[in-house]
Amino acid sequence: MNKPHYQTGLKQNWPQFSLLVLINAFVGGMVGLERTILPELAETEFGIAARTAIFSFIIVFGFTKAAANYAAGRFSARYGRKNMLIAGWLFGIPVPFVLMFAPDWNWIIAANVLLGINQGLAWSANVIMKIDLAGEKDRGLAMGLNEFAGYLAVAVVAFLTGWIAAEFGLRPYPFLLGIGLSVLGLLLTIFFVKDTAGFVQTESAQSALEQTRKPVFMEVSWANRSLMSVSQAGLLTNFKDGMAWGIFPIFLLAAGLSLPQAGLVIAVYPACWGLFQVATGKLSDYTGRRGMLTGGMMVQGLSLLAFTYAGGYGGYLLTAALLGIGTAMVYPVFLAAIADLVHPADRAESVGVFRLWRDSGYAFGALFAGLIADRFSIEAAMLATAALLLLSAAVIALKYRNAAPKTGVQP
Image (cartoon, rainbow, N blue to C red):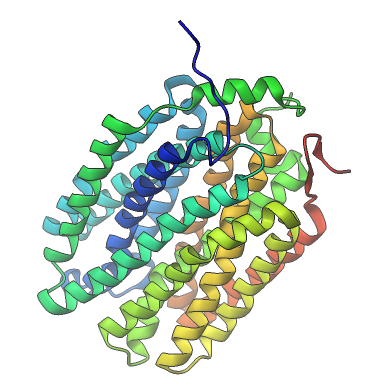
């Protein structure tokens, strides 16, 4: 009996890769359920006014997802990428039901623990499988397609939930979308997804990179300056998103926008984030990762600064779009850069460690924004976040070195 032939590349593996892109759209849609209406739900139905308390659902989500990311990376090699993806969906199915029928805010927090595990396991396993399939040549494009599908789905579902809430009320109807997404995602994974362990074995035999002698956590977190710079930029990118998740709905409604208008502004940001990632990911395959990462962090910081002073519906739409474009410049490139710099056998755990740091940014950003907004103002939280993004751009410019093809990091 002939052994299976594992040849990397998008062209050779397009049916399985396309299926994983579709499934990642379902994963992203699960986050979109909460983007527009949960802060409004906190104030309207549960009477929670303090920003720090409202942001508690983002803080719990961020830390839970970060830990689940690390678990997915650590255990994918041992138990299989597909099994991690299935486990992620099993944790996701209860989420919309809890959000629909939660009698108090503690149930919302519990739903976000489940959602964080769902996102950490399912999205991480999906990312790792795509990197396995794509190979070195198309890595940036593969990550662009992955993040495009996930974050476009966030935007679409965020807009739909805002519209449904305005037409039919905050509960239960907006959350019905989540039931369909989670059930379809689980069924497609069980019956059609194939594990990618064989691709890793083939690529490992051909790689010129050496496996790290240090613990992978140490290598990605601080020991390797290039990997460290990517990790801090990932953390601060999602730091900004954790702030935006909680701040933007409150800020826009206080500025006089209607709920559907606020929903559209909130949706434009992840929509541009999603749409432009295919181009930015592929461009980084040709230009190297450093310029795209540095420029993207700068665009995020400057556009968030401009958003604070936009002063009208049109201005908010424009600056939200620029914020999304800046995020698109870095998001797929982060993952491609990590994969460039590590041996294939270290890839799954390295991606898990990076995503641990990146998605802990949700929690740190929400906590920071809540504390600053309660003590000073919402605008102060946004301005401080913009300053941190610009500082992160400087760290990338100084510390990151592009990987040389097939030889590892340039000196």
